[in-house]
Image (tube, rainbow, N blue to C red; front, side):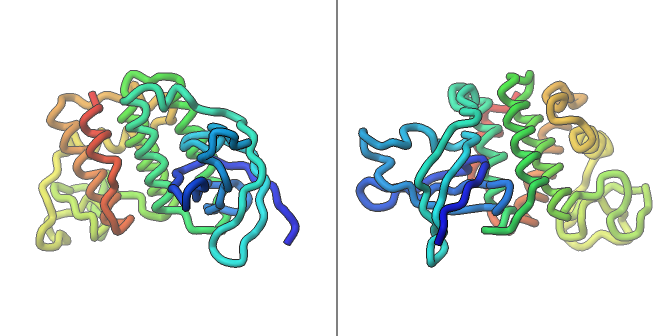
Length: 246
């Protein structure tokens, strides 16, 4: 098979054998791609640090017969090194990368997700006041792009604006008449804060403030619970993000 070129963001990597790595990249043209970078863990490797998570790269690859392609060349477009050097930025960035990895399908093109991720990483590199808020705004936008945007202003079932409960299974805020067993109480302040994060541009999301810490904690719990329900798995990066959040 002839080689092909791609551009994308490195999501994660895993060791393979003694010297290789499997690198997962969210690309613009081919969706999520998993490729083997041979010899990358050797000190003499031509890849160096070009395939670290967060890095925006140009790649040359060969398609594999199975699920793994082979990466033969990598050139850095933007290293996003500042994100790796600051714990709060790193925690927010890890949440973005993990969420994209969970949502994206292998070899299924989705330019909107790639552009959203690049915008999120650039917003973190600008060192926002509240990196966690940027990650939360990103997650809301990613859910929306993926068809899972939570209802925040009206009942997800009937459209009533008299909402006091929240159910991830029903799609977000719900009225008492439509709530299922187990739906939790929600305050209007928490819904309003999530709504502000959803509407904010990513570069401005880091300045979005909740009225108090209790509202912020409630909103974060609603968002992450909703995301994990629809992603159908726990997000490993969330505890670190919560610990580093303001």
